Length: 497
Image (cartoon, rainbow, N blue to C red):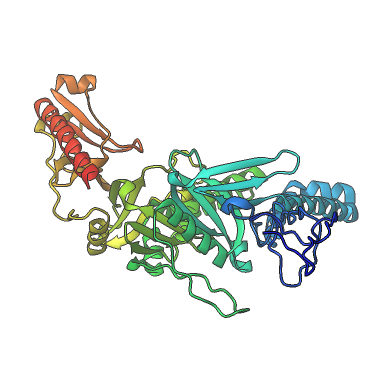
């Protein structure tokens, strides 16, 4: 119904546009009470850009986040070590200290600039169920990591990161050739929170509740919940590495070096360098084990194990129990007088060709007594008793192949795992859950064919598995058939859960 004036005539028509029209719903920012009228359509708010700190792009996609501002400094420190190592002492003697300092300064500045540029163009954000990592200036590269294939997220803190309160986040993806998309570096709180969130999105754990904080108060890192299983004493770790062949051979090596020096009277540079290199190779492995397993702690959290270890480089690794393929117990010769053993495991999805084997979560117990070992094995393989496993030795005619170790080699079928024993000086025990057996093979060497013997292999997804060596031929075929049937039944049971 049109308006009319008091006189009854319609109001004069106004050709001017309506001064205060509103934009359509959902287009542009909502007008506030003090908004100034403007022409329609109102311009869209400026997009915050690829590195927006607050609002995200449409559709619920999160904004990209940068790494910690100190990341270029840590990367530059690594480059500084490479530069100093590259500029040899002979360069200093040829060009003099002044030019040598100039070269070092130029290289350091160049490395710092490259690190800052790399940091400025590196970022990450979550898009649905993907983690996308962006990097590169001239050659842009985007890596999309589907979180459904996420195996584990590890928090690693090298020495420089510990000194600056930072951490590195490394992702392990099922079927990946190496550790994916390391985010170096983040603050410890940010790395821990991002790790929990990625695992929650991937369905590996429930998201941790975030308590409300006061405005302006520092955000504390979330404390992961779990049950402490065991913590290795550093004293036991040191003693265990002293009870190794390398530690016992080191005094003999020192005596040999001293005798050679006294007999020769003087040594050449090549002789000294070769001797020091050989001695370093002997002691390097025990020292590395001590540094890697320092303050070793093992926690249980629902269906995962959390491993904390390291001195110069601390690590927090996650082991999904449903992907454990094998558990191996080792009793070194010198450890047996103290009743100690070592536990290792194999996890599906971790690349065996990883350049740094420390990225593989194979540490289950670096050193411990029999009771601790039995407790840890029962946590990983429920219902399995380490001290009550069946294992029968090969037949007596196998002594022609194993004259000394026939009595310590054996195999057996437990209710839940396949058991294989081996080793003479260093005893080894391998446990393979039936549900993890991928294939069963029977192999025979020419000598085994003459002795009517065979070896039964139970292969796992990781390629290691276990083997029952030098079994009677009829028993070997029977064992292979039984392993095949039990593995099928175990997989049906797991799939029905």
